[in-house]
Image (cartoon, rainbow, N blue to C red; front, side, top):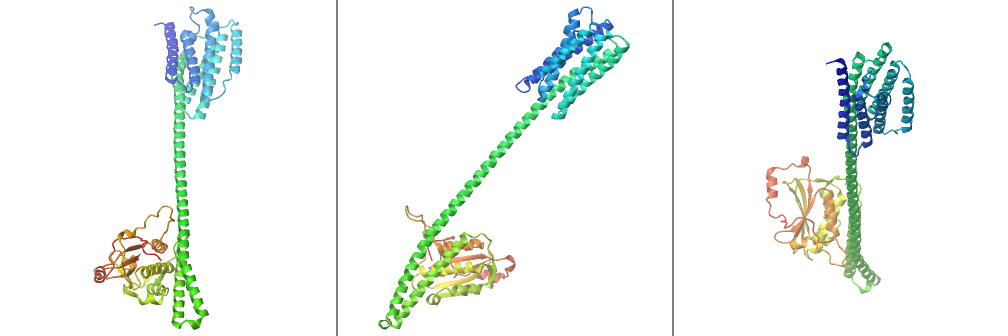
Length: 509
């Protein structure tokens, strides 16, 4: 194999490598993204491959190459291929193409090439063409390096280093031109061929990686934008749900307050009317003391006193309901003696009611950590309910005992009245057009027990009567009861037997 044939084969191989890599890059990257940049780069690489395959690296050119191609066409195509690749990189980086600047540079290079052709020394046009190639490959490498710094794509550095390697080989060839005319097959020519082959591989593969990295980043950004949009939508939906919840709570509170106002109007109207009648009767008796006996005067005053007591009880419930509804601070508990709470509650009852009340102590616990005012109000409401709805001669018993199984204290208010049916334990729904009425007394009792973590249990007692239980949880440290006493309390037969647990509106204050 002769040296001339080897040179031509190497030149054709490098040119064919550029053509194949250009076609591969265009086929793999064609599409809407980076379409213009890919087209410019593939066209430039294809043109460069055609020029190299036609003998662009052979110096001197083979004699069969036409003179017009040697002097005009091949240099122009080489210059155009470099300009196209520079424009492709600028387009990929998002920079303006500056076609006017490229046209001016091409015109200047063409004028310089025309002047160099006038020289009789073959080293002049070869050196000029080599210098243009050095400038072009250096500019391509510089643009690729800037792209790697901007986008962070490592493949852009492949393009930069491959082009700069070709630049270095061309610089060595320029130094060889200074000592001897250009010659194909010399060491400097083989250095350029090797560098051109590396540029064909890593340059095109690097540009392919640059575009793929850009597409990957765009896909990640689109995915992140979709995730952000989904998160924003979920946050908006959650905010909307929270607003709906707040609106529902607001409506519920408004209905609660409206219902409370209706209950207050209903609860206070009748006692005030009764109090007015009792006071009028007492005033008439006092104005004519001679026409009335002392017994009649005492009865009228006693009735007025009882009605005023009812009014005071209603007002206490009203104030307690308003306090419980508007409570913003946690419950302040105190360690209060049980007998003090019971005596304080009994002080709110009338003399006739106290005659029919029996207090039964069955516990060794003497103190309870509660809010005394609220517990007193709850216990008084249950006692007044028992006297008001158990009948005129009802007997009421207040039993204070313990529940060992649940570690709790129980206050049981039981009467021997007729009791109620299980259906009366549930509040009936209001009829259309009628105002919603709540049973204020038991509603307050239930809220008081909820605040203390306890429970209100309502039901019929055996063999007859009605029982209401206030169950307060006891701290574990305060529970000191032996097993015999616990079994005795659990096994007692005279405690109330409930038929249904829960709040009841069957008995009102």
